Length: 137
Image 1: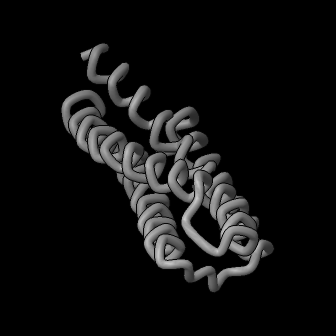
Image 2: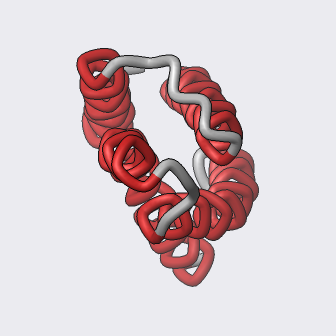
């Protein structure tokens, strides 16, 4: 049981690295594209980080569902956590759309948008952590 928790936490930490870093990296990638006019090292790093953390996200979700079922018996707070994780996952998918567009050299979003977009994930993560620690229901 403890190993599942450890794997879950490790994978979630890896996924969160990308959730926080990729929107910020898109800002630097956009600047690099403006200078080089082509795909450069920042873009390569951003794509690799997103791809790697996608696998961690899948493992994190699977182990989280298992824990929600086997350890916490689908307690009400687990449902709230899953709803919030679903929103964070949607944010992550939207980030993936931005990464795919950036690979084609299309940067529609402003730096301000990307900074706000990045902070939304922080707020979502704080909400998830609050639910897990406090277990309000």
